[in-house]
Length: 204
Image (cartoon, rainbow, N blue to C red; front, top):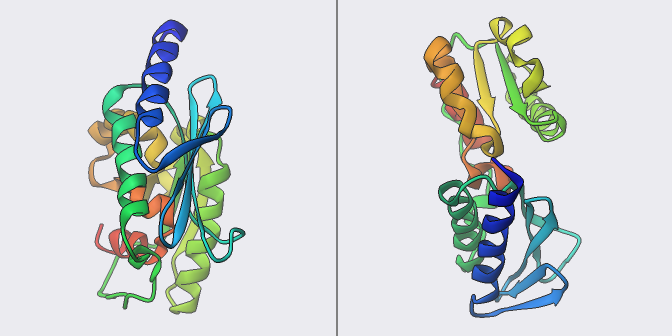
């Protein structure tokens, strides 16, 4: 996408967020939304990058939601923002209750790969999900890679999860690798819903 188009879209979404009720521009390019039990921040970092964060109102060091992405088109950006505000406007953080019982049936999945743009977010997910798998005595390995290295390792994995920020390129891989390719929903990604991601992997 051209820099000019990126700048136009960023300006559009900036003014759109600026018009939202219950929000205020806390400092330049950072909008704050104070809910009953949580505080949300929408930060326009620059160069088309946006950060969405929510913290507990009781403990502002406790992150409840985090997602960053590049503004590439109206559809994806609107989806990420809607996911974030749906989370903010929920009265309770049910999505953070990851004690949901995991239904484990026979699965052929032995290794899972997480992919993002630079490899940092996916590495965190791989580490945390492997810890969850070990706690449930499931012999499944996880790993992470930046998308630029994906083709060199993809054949070594049974399931490949794309972070929502790069889901726009999934079709390029779906065509060749089919049901091996999956997307982490922006809600599960933003709230670290590892149990639901594991369930999705085991059903692949």
